[in-house]
Length: 288
Picture: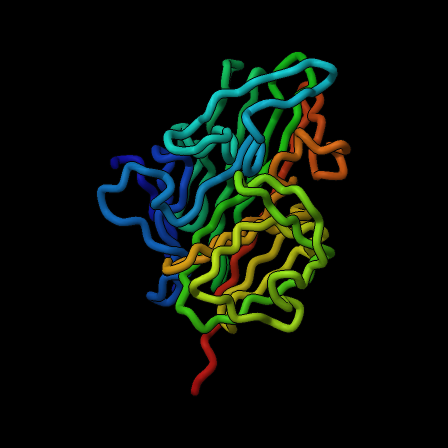
């Protein structure tokens, strides 16, 4: 597409796809893919390297929730998924508002409809660093009423099969058959990630960790950092060449938890904004 952007700094190269959900097409460092490259000709955002989650993260069970005393029912927002998923930013076209050789900003907006009954606008800022990428996702409530909000990013990180996943968290949510969290478990329930754990290539992980400390290492060469995300959703499907390590400000189905704020939910006042940051760093692989 004509509005695809390519940014370069040192050995870093970033391709942005504003026209396809504000997604990242690829992120390479020293010629090595850090994020799963998007195939040529793709029109499905789920096949990209990463995409934004806005104005909510992950699922809303059945699309039903109550906010400020009013009940709402949202339809599915993407074919093949039972629950509304990942917000609306990933199914919208974004526009470029700033761009130079090493950085860019893109934006999109929404007017209240059946998929989200509040107005909002969002902006993503991308900046290449030496050996890394910084992304900031900002949401502004442009409605006359408060609205619920939550943010996240959905990077697909290249998976080789022998990397150790390492991070610290307070606990993890166990899901029901519809992938809705139902029970809190100790953080080590699916592996000792504090010490570093090699994932079973044949076992699905699709779970949200709470009390995440904001850092995660994927093997010796890749790390993710966020100061504003209290949750880390790990999606590792069997047989695939990627793992998704999704920093989010809220847990899945946060709108239906007894304590929306404890679940990471924010009641965003008119004109107020919420920001989520993400930094991906690529370190040189150790020599054998």
